[in-house]
Image 1 (cartoon, rainbow, N blue to C red):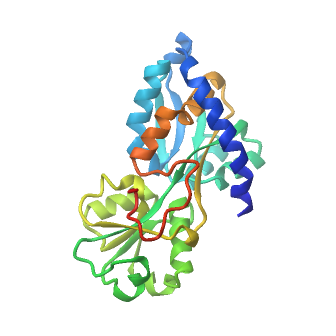
Image 2: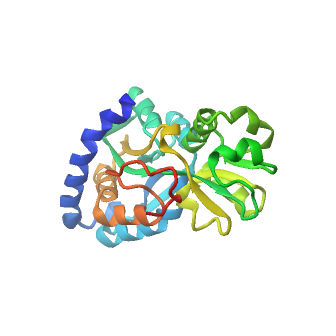
Amino acid sequence: MAKTAGWAGFRTGALRLALCLLPVLGPALPAQAAEPLRVAAASDLRSVWLALSTEFKRHTEIEVSPSFAASGKLSQQIEQGAPFDVFLSADQDFVERLQAQGLTQGTPVQYTRGQLGLWVREDSRIEHLHQLGERLQGKLVMANPRHAPYGMRAEEVLRGSGQWEQCQSHLVLGENVAQAAQLVISGEAEAALLATSYKDEVAGGRWLTIDPGLHRPLWQVGVMLHTERRDAAQQWLDFLLSEPAQVIFRQRGFLPLDSAPSRPDQVAGQP
């Protein structure tokens, strides 16, 4: 996975820099503080947003206003001129695409690593991923792989486990991983391939870990766009790499930046 290796060296140095910078993050200028920082945010960040933005404001007095959607949809909006200051993608590919078009500035940062898990209803006969094709009777929910990174990884998992064709008649697609989670919450599914950041919202059922070798890693990358609020945008990106922010990510089901892949027999989001 050449792309992932290309980012690996940078993220360690960036994390160290951010840890040094957080204590000196100061209040924004009054003019900046009056207007929230506009962030295009991947849908899997909904569960951590309040905690992150509250902690950031405590240090900087800067308000952050998110627009949540699938990363692919957000990148399209940015290409069409949407007035965002920062883009937080659920993977690196969409950031690289914007970079290639000259729509970003500064250096991208890897701010966390997403985790895909398999949720099954409590009464389901499915006990691990490889039983999906054989035992699934109800609906299988996942994000749309056309523009949602979690949907792309879910498709990779089903293809890699040889169950893509078997599951076709059961598939129900959400426009993004948040909508997919909502379908599960509303009782629409027997099983779902979701971000483990939704494990607190999706009550009941069982979470099963997916072999990380079945899909590309979800290295989540943020980047500054062409904005006049460069100082505030950079403070936000630096904050995401700080220890307080990283603790919040870990508590909500994301993986540490320096983590090794989980063992397939572990329960998603648990040690």
